[in-house]
Amino acid sequence: MSTIVVATPVIAGLGALFKSHALAKKTVVLFDEHTRKLYGASLLQTLRDEGFLYKELVVPAKEASKSFSAAYRLYGSMIEADVDRSWNLLAVGGGVVGDLGGFIAASYFRGIPIIQLPTTLLAMTDSSIGGKVAINHPLGKNLIGFFHEAELILIDPSYLATLPLREIYAGMAEVVKYGFIADEPFFTFLDLHFAEIMSLQEPFLTQAIKKSACTKADVVKKDFRETGGLRATLNFGHTFAHGLEKLAEYRYLRHGEAVTIGMVCALFLSHNLGYLDQPSLERGLALLQKFRFPKGLVKRRFLDIDSALLLDAMLSDKKKLDKKLRFVLLKKLGKAFLLEENVEESIVLQSINDGQKFFNGKSAH
Ligand SMILES: NC(=O)c1ccc[n+]([C@@H]2O[C@H](COP(=O)([O-])OP(=O)(O)OC[C@H]3O[C@@H](n4cnc5c(N)ncnc54)[C@H](O)[C@@H]3O)[C@@H](O)[C@H]2O)c1
Ligand SMILES: [Zn+2]
Image 1 (cartoon, rainbow, N blue to C red):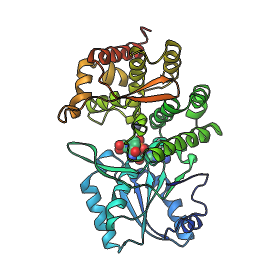
Image 2: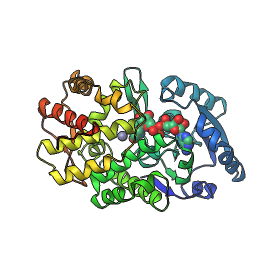
Image 3: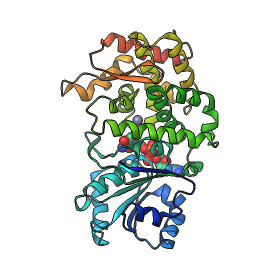
Image 4: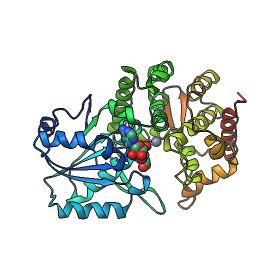
């Protein structure tokens, strides 16, 4: 189990924290170009003040850094710096740095400890927690990886002050997801305080992050290797989202944007299959209505797409393995489940169409 620390500044007393977790003060610090520029100087100063030995590594701030070639280059720098099994790796950044850093830590010298210092809302509430670390393969995202849980997850909400608004919305999608799948009071809290959280107001921001991180950690604790169906509920909205991301070539839609649209479709699907009642559907949609997207994005990446094409994209990586689409549905707000049986294509298509009408501002419901 990882230890999650939420504090500002979270790096104060880092030496003592490492010591109490039996972590050596010998650390490879991985940044992307943005987090290096924004937070590198102060973090590295802290490491010097606290008597750490460190090796700094920087990767370009893009999804393409989650690649084998990037990992291979970084292994080389670590070998040259005499980094051995007694070291650990501190990943300072969003999900890209966290996933890449975790992948390197899981494999280098047969595994060294990873410490996550997430700097995006998505990483603070989702990707840094749960131990799934991966790089991409040209044939698919996140295909090569490990389960390698972080020793420590160090969350400092004040890092979000520099995060672009678009990225805050993207992270907020996963936060709202936890309300939908696990906790009705949290759903209500998010609905009430959406604007405060989006403008990073305390104590709402920290409350939302803590609750999200704990929800994810709790689900992961109960179903680490995703065998019981519980961890799969974290994929609420994601079956649709993955299709949308694929159609957007993994470039033009942020993951959280695809998840926001995907959750709208998943709410309709839950309703169309008779699991979710009308008032709950409407409450769910009202919360998702608060999300904002760059101008024209939803039109280009969702409304202009034929629902059959989206269904094809959702199915594309499943067909080869003769797998069925798996949907996470809601019974009510705060209660999700993984539907085991096959869903008729016409109902999936209908739910996509309902989602499109919703974003067009003329919901049929
Ligand atoms: N391992 C998991 O369980 C899991 C879960 C969800 C997503 N992911 C992965 O996470 C990745 C997406 O993560 P992300 O959304 O954090 O994207 P990201 O890491 O690309 O970060 C988004 C952008 O924000 C910048 N940034 C980061 N922190 C900043 C800060 N404090 N101020 C200003 N700019 C900052 C980054 O440099 C980058 O340009 C994807 O690769 C996805 O596959 C993994
Ligand atoms: Zn997600």
